Image 1 (tube, rainbow, N blue to C red):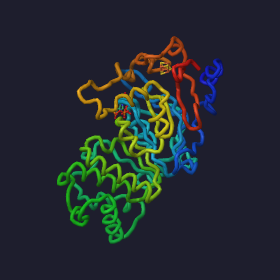
Image 2 (cartoon, protein in one colour):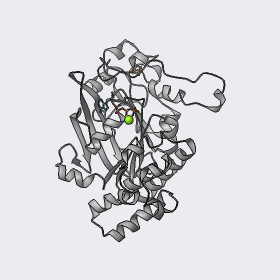
Image 3 (cartoon, rainbow, N blue to C red):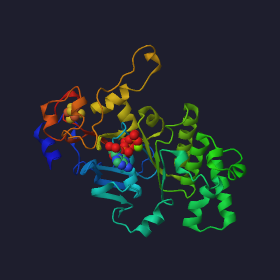
Length: 359
Ligand SMILES: Nc1ncnc2c1ncn2[C@@H]1O[C@H](COP(=O)(O)OP(=O)(O)OP(=O)(O)O)[C@@H](O)[C@H]1O
Ligand code: SF4
Ligand SMILES: [Mg+2]
């Protein structure tokens, strides 16, 4: 109740409203590809962590939707909870982490409650993930062709010849030259960019409804990075695959995503279409991230950075976890959790002082 109560205490500026339904982000039709069909609903998801002899919170009561066919960016500094949120969606949290509360609904089925056998049918078929480290995510002892075809062998039980055809097709889709020759190689015989393409091919071969790409371009040079982004866009269009694209780099998010979620210290700070976030950011953290994007006309001057650092999971957190780094914060930010405000349809911000004015 705190969010709605707190938002109602002060008169909002014209057009600003408390979020409908406790911060649940409602239908947003402003993305051109967004048909409004919700594929995934995250509701009040909290993820706990066993650390230093205690139990702490890595992700704190977050809610959002993923629409069919969209590319949704998730951005935030290191340690904000981007990866663990998405590992929870895949049911792949390591032992020290656990879902503390909330739900993850995929096509209205609660993924926290499904049986391991049902989960095994989903992962690698309808839902797939490209991990942060392409080299360590590939089996060094298995030839590329066999690895890429494995999801089809396990999930679709296709005959060998059919699998081979599909592997050749998907390696071509990800722009790997001479797929038949690549199939015979081992991961260490490929470059970093080629390995990342193989990871994408393996995730895409079943034509999943949802693809989670966790920093898929971080280790790549800018030319290969641009090619991989184009490739993900193409797969999104060709198969209408929804993509959750995780990055700490808003400039990269800006190139590929329809909508963006900004995360800070395990919470959502702001959500909107990419244009809303880039052109009219409302949260001070988002503004800081945008100011930190290097530009050509900055040559010779210091790059902007947000002073301070993200609190660790074991630190005591303020009601607004960004309060220690925020230049416009007020006393209330250290006493009450920020309200969830919808400042225009589909543009959500969790802050006491949107546009520098207390709400
Ligand atoms: N396997 C793990 N064991 C212990 N703590 C973990 C583990 N994985 C994540 N954490 C902690 O959970 C919090 C969220 O981590 P997460 O990996 O989701 O961050 P991230 O936003 O993906 O960061 P990055 O940009 O560095 O990948 C961090 O404080 C991190 O230290
Ligand atoms: S709630 Fe307060 S401290 Fe947090 S971002 Fe908004 S103004 Fe800054
Ligand atoms: Mg991560």
